[in-house]
Image (cartoon, rainbow, N blue to C red):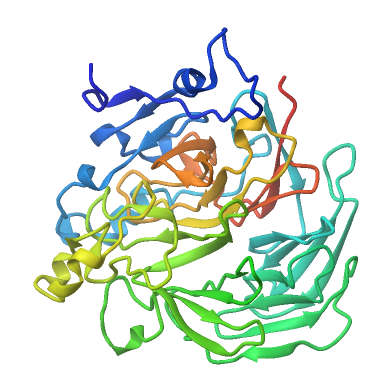
Length: 444
């Protein structure tokens, strides 16, 4: 049967390192074909929260997209309730997310968090967390034998803090950069600081406000550029309120505006730089009200000057029916993203795995947190996905990695940020359960 003739095809994505890697006496090329699980393709690749399962892989393409549905087919309140937002509650005491065989999931931080969101690992291994609800940036240091932080501290306070990063790159950064919706500040920093030692320097004070509120930040690999993600003010409007919105903006590290790095990206919540290729990547929430399976969220490398469609087009040259006939000159310029994710998953933080704890085939792969959205009749998202990469490139496949944020159909967890701890474990902030999860690997 030719590839693509069935909805479920065998594609193998393990990576082998070293010239002697063999499986069953065959070479690396054959091993790449014979390793992994079924990848679900075609219409069956679309899913919902209840159908997620660790290790299950899928690939959605632009050719798979259904036709838009009128937004009035299901009243918003009814959809909101059907997606689980009316019946969620506290995490049951014994409820733990599920990971693939060989992985263990424990609570890293169990209490004291209000709305834990973005996380970044400092060069010395400390984990910085934006507790957006508390308006603080927390620091967690080390891992005890039972998988808990050895030390913790409030580093600084900033209302609605979200984005965090360190500059310059390397083992001894001099600054911690922190954002909220309208402002970027930086604190003087030296390795080991558990509390800010001075007043913040305000670098940017005119970031557009309203609408999508997260403002992630990363630096280019050469240290010359600071990238700032600014989501749209609306679902799919093209009015004046969208000036410098749905963009990734470029600044110098000193806060001088350079320009729009990429546009048409509705809500680029998470940013990351691929350490292998140096490319900027983003994790994106696409628009609502076009049906359960439109428009796919996505994770993709970002091209300088690239246009990703919003609000007039989506996933290439598909026209949003709300803007029929507008801007035909942009249709062929709209870029199809690398990895299309189930619509309304609400893709947030992302990270590239640079640890040594997980099996070798995970090295260099990406993880992204899928927060979950109201705009799916059965609920979607509420998981962490793995994006297999080969030499820094995606194939369009993604895999359910951490699932089970619901119990008996009642949702309680919503993953937001992902970070790789110094010991190689994966940390996941959860603003539904108000904890940080730790995923470790023992192979047992």
